[in-house]
Image (cartoon, rainbow, N blue to C red; front, side, top):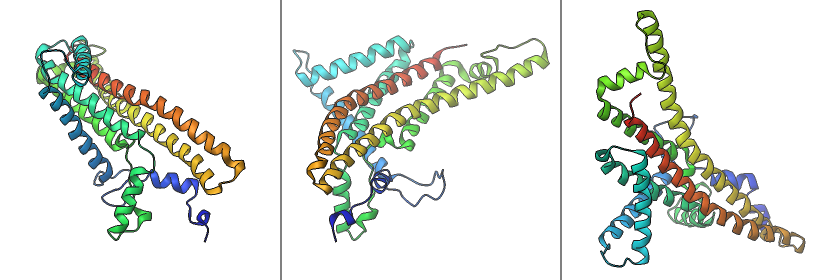
Length: 294
């Protein structure tokens, strides 16, 4: 039997790479009892790596002339601290918010950077391990870009929402925040009927604002990284098509595979850092808004 006969089609290849390693088969559109094991493991490992990176930088810091590693970390810390000071004006809150923003930036950057690995590198290694363990290699699923998983990006966005709710209560108090929920943005009235109507409208607007900010926060990161992952798969298919045909007429596919792969990798580096920066900035903005009274 020829290699072409055993090879998956383009749609099968993409579908396999977009399938998560899950705790149990998903039967519905939404099921909160299912865990994407690959995203959990990779996110945890990269989180530990990011914390180790920052801990090592702090441990190796010297008051003299810094080395390249220390200088890079100092530039990063200064950048985050400057942004935090310009957005969150409460000095006491910044003692927690600034380290949080730093961890968010480093962690999301590392999660996004998994997109730079060759598309089939880790999935191929996992298929070999899964097969040696007695499993069917065709059902060995592994997605290596956690931020291209909607549950990860939305999970981080929801976590930011909970932090914002915490600061709303901490800064304004339960009574102050409750008053803001029903009195902003349209104010209130001395007329009890109009006051009730305005209170309902204000509360609805506040809920819509919280939901929309959280949804856009997570979806922006997910959409950009998902598109990048999909483009790398399409570029990989160009090289695969040339490898399976191996005809002189298909050399253009190899050329496109090399040129487009290089070009998108360079552009993807910008996207990786930019999306981490945008996610961090929105985190600071939303927390800063939680400190403001309306």
